[in-house]
Length: 236
Image (tube, rainbow, N blue to C red; front, side):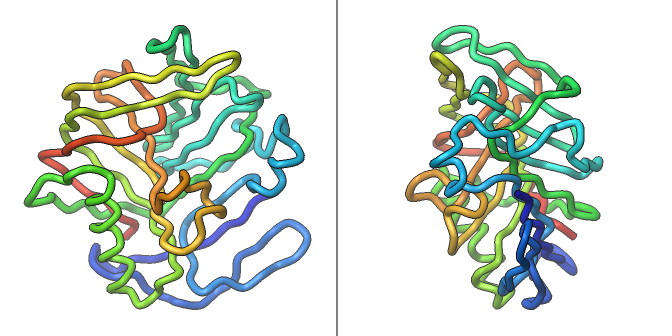
């Protein structure tokens, strides 16, 4: 199941166009605002089909601006998409992973969320981002300014992260670890109203994945204490 939505930003400060439609396989349904986001799969479907394949990666349209996230088929790997490049992490121990940069022809995802804006507009941040709550608060300011309070917002954030906690799914067990300090790129979706449509973690309004600049770590970002020298990119 794929649910595309579209948001346009005429600059970095405001969202526009609070009208449109969201297409869903079988039956279209209205949505208050549109965003350049495609969601493959749904939580409701996964409850009864936990081993389903919602998307074959090689068949998913991807551009140089695409970002995204999701678990692979069978929850064996953690999928991250940054600037159109796949990062597929597999647990090799309780705190170690291996990384591949290209999916096989039949590689699939249990669910997959992708945003492919026409372009990103970057803005340096004057102050550090003090953890996930602060990141949510900053993204909410852009959504609130748009007047489209039901709108979801894709983002890309680079900088130096401190005390970051990451995790990767896996069977029989995944992996998780800690980064004391690292150059990273974060990608994700902020959704203020619906934690199901883009698979928000419990109690959160943002789903974030991370890739380190040295290419050694990629996966779900559970939390961090600060991100400095930040550059926030939102859809143009």
